[in-house]
Length: 435
Image 1 (cartoon, one colour):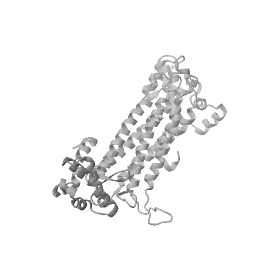
Image 2: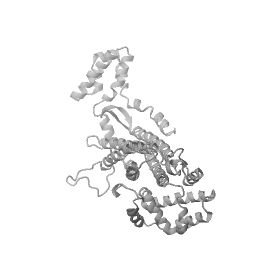
Image 3: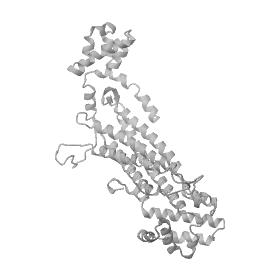
Image 4: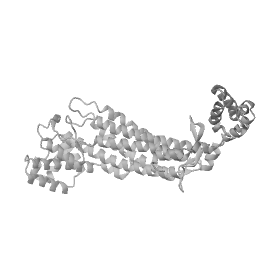
């Protein structure tokens, strides 16, 4: 995490202060359950809550203890005991470090997921608003970067809305999958702690008990979570690349908002560069890169090892903080995106009717011309437009083989732009569920 690409609320989830507070809550909820089943005195559980809740955990002091113990959870428990006093002997009864670490990580990831879901909701709202704004703004669709057939800019944004809706659904499932709790003790057998403790802690933290924890929560859950973040990042890049292409000088159909006082280049004062979407492309690469080590973490030795630990200390905060920032930035880009319908119209007509070639091809086949001959007739006229700047309609009307098959009025009718947008409402109804 670096401050440049971070937002405070997500960063706070991963702060040492937050982590130690969650650790305390896990231990205190466990003490409540232990007291309820008669393993420790109820008065001790109350003391632990009262004194621990009021404690101001000193991160530097915990770090200092850890430099001696070489164990982060023991360092924390030692520090906590300074606040709790003699009743601290009842803390961590029958538990192992992974019970605290893994359950805390689950809490942090679910909280991070909640922020990311809110980010996606904001992005979806912006996409929907702009999609309806430009539902009927005709533009050229491209395949391989080359003019294909007309579409609308609203349809482009509706596609992005549908894609990010799928992203949201995946994240909901990933959040559910990661929201598990393990309080099962060494090698996960509950030998020294009652399973009811785990059930109580899970309920209090909004988690569910891990069916078989083996001392650690299985990392396939985490792999799916970070893979889902990687897919969302890929969708961020897809939309960003679309905007970058549309902002190219030769295209200029849409453009990132250029604020007063903004500078595009230290050397060239005329420049207005797509810096935000270029930045998003780079950030997406980073988020995707965190998915691979998460997958490699799945194969731990036997009941546990800690080869996953160093990885997760990095990718947990880095992936969620980076994606949180990226989604917020993309929302801002969409919200303020400058759209140029006149340039869209100019580009659409740049090759003087070529975008209607398929309609002419189909009309010829329906008039009795073989598909091979119809393709040949249309293509030879199209090539004169490409190579000589001719007008496609005029070339067709001057081609006797074409006019022998199709009357002039029918040829002209095939150049109606409205033909290509007649199902836009259907597309929008499928995406947004609205008439």
